[in-house]
Length: 117
Image (cartoon, rainbow, N blue to C red; front, side, top):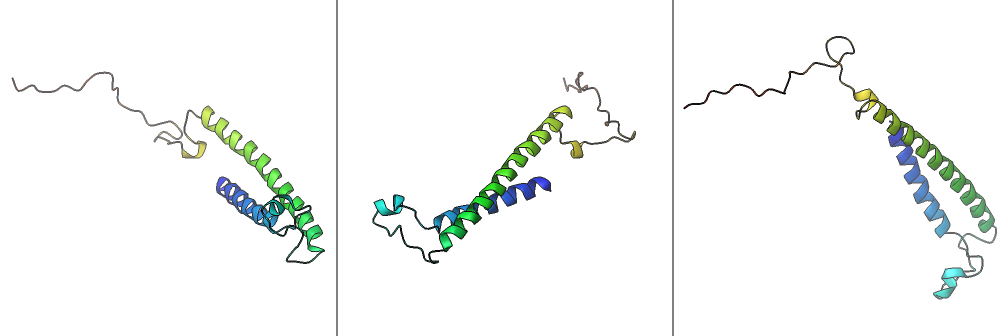
């Protein structure tokens, strides 16, 4: 559940950050000026650039912190899976003996087969 929420919030914040950067006003023309676009105008007024810059910095900081936490969390999950022998810790099968894995028959000897000859 936590893994799903981390991935979901990372995705939503990444898309929001992309859209936020795209609607910002260009500071010196930049790439928009190279293609003949109007880099110095903003659809949201002159004060909007400062507000969008602050929001972008805040969202980027939250996104970076969430990325660092995700790396730590998924690395920890990977180590727990390695320690448990390849199965996720919550998905280990328990046998009838209260925590002991169910025993399997010895598969080293082949079953006897009747040969019709």
